[in-house]
Image (cartoon, rainbow, N blue to C red):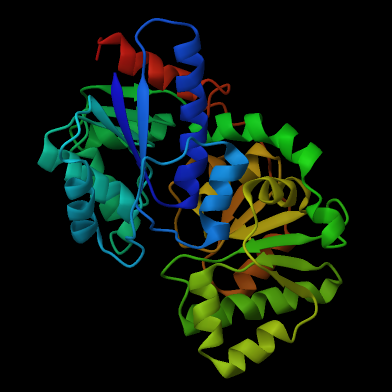
Amino acid sequence: MRILTIIGARPQFIKAAAVSRAISTHNKLGGNRIDEFILHTGQHYDHNMSQIFFDDLEIPKPAWLLNCSAMMPEPMSKEITDTVKNEKFDCVLLYGDTYSTLAGALAAENLQIPIAHVEAGLRSFNNAMPEEHNRIETDHRAKWLFCPTTTAVENLTNEGITRNVHLVGDVMYDAALIFAGIATKKSDILTRLNLRHKDFYLATIHRAENTNTENLTRIFSALSSIATDGTPIVLPLHPRTRNVIDSDACMKAKVFGNSAIKIIEPVNYLDMIMLEKSARLILTDSGGIQKEAYFHQTPCVTLREETEWVETVNAGWNKIVGTDAEKIKSAIESPFAKQLITDYGSGDSAQKIIEILCSGNY
């Protein structure tokens, strides 16, 4: 079996790492061999946002590395199509909801290659989000739909998609289990930043709806208010967020002039795991980090008006607050009613995906 894996952004690298390991294990056990070929769209081109994740996660070297960082899905799709049109594949494996995901789906459709979508069925019900459009369009083109939660299965059912829908759990949980122990042994990020366990906040900001002057001003106002309790806030700065800050002299002075907010460059995945495990609380607009917070038993405040991961909210680990400074501060100060989430599986989601693809029983 020949699989084309298309990835282009940090969360996809992490998910692909878990599945690539499952493919390697499958091949060692014999049976129907899988040959995986990775195409990296180049959506994330910065070394700290891309290559370093391949290094840390031991993802196989991409067979193709494109330069699609500034492209929308349609032109990116053409680049993918032109690159692999002379190759033969049994399926295209796609992850999540980025432009690379939809571009891969469009290319696969053009080339008439069946699509397998990992993290199918997620919905924020915010049609203004590019990610919502990307995931819906990909799901409606996919042959295999691998859902991480029962809610995702229900979302697909409500859209009339019931064929080849599989509840497999979350491959991000697989990755968390695989790499948490490695991070503990290899990462020295706490020492380098002079941080104490559970004595700092971790923040990440990168989504398009938050990386504008108005919302960033509100978020940083909240962070500055939170930081007055003496607890430092660590902020690995995404390139998109940095560009907005650098373009506004007043904001730049306030952000970089606040010693309680530790601005650092984007970190590798092992360092990020250590920061997530060790933080007192995480503030983020990332979908993946909301889940990783739960995986590492760290409360989370989400700087958005909605989430695809409703089970993290229902279980009391996650609070949705948007960008209102008072709501952010109130969420941090009030208790979290934390309960166990069973939907994410037991760390064998990637194995289930490979077994289904190889079984022929769809």
